[in-house]
Image (tube, rainbow over all chains, first blue to last red; front, side):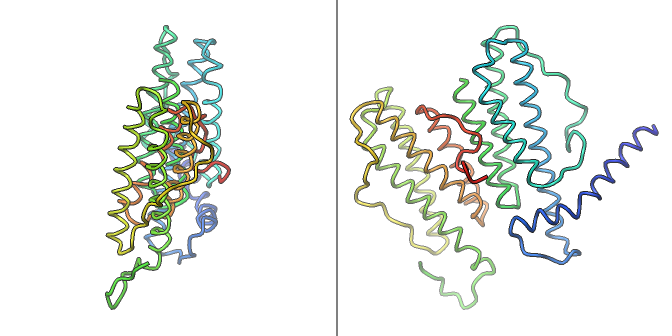
Length: 170
Length: 154
């Protein structure tokens, strides 16, 4: 399929175009300048970009669930509003740490369908709480794997924030 | 700070120092929490069983930090004989306020340690420490925030 090839090429171009700016972002985090050919730092940089990309996808998924839940149950808007704002802040911080390739993210598979929301408001709220806790667990794993100290701290803090959401929504 | 007698220090020795300092700060925070729950415990809700559970987890992390610091060749900081409380604990509300304050401050110390840790063991203890402290702060009635432990530093 020609369209698919073009899509793949576009992503590849985005990846290449993003590379020099990512080097700048890494230096801004306090890493020592290294020779361009050194494979180690380059490999960890790519791994951290993937972690950040996955985390961005996770935040987008949670935001979509929050939006769908409030659309189905306007009575829950007040309860969720401040927590939704936290996810906006998470997303902004993850994106501010450097450019990311376009696309749904590694391992995201097909674009996520609109989240389904339970007809019962209590059940819908419980589903959000479950999703927050699952997202927190994923961020813990990401924080353990991150090479960069700043990314690790940001991911740990996001994990803590979402675990706290799980508590207030329980 | 003790040094290893090895003739040539391991390559990570220079970069390990901030990690140990951050671990010592988190350990000092755990000591303060253990003391604080001793004071506040009787006034906390659920017949103090929730406070007891929190105290148990603080003791476990205190012991884990102590072991990791000692394994790195440093002398783990000891608990102070007593700590000045920010305000007297006389009832459930003041006990809850102290619990929130202790956990939020501890969360910031663990967030520092996440960035400074140079071993997977210390990183994991720190990451789980930020999450546990935040969950406990919210459980005591603290307001959820976007960046626990990093508030104002992001």
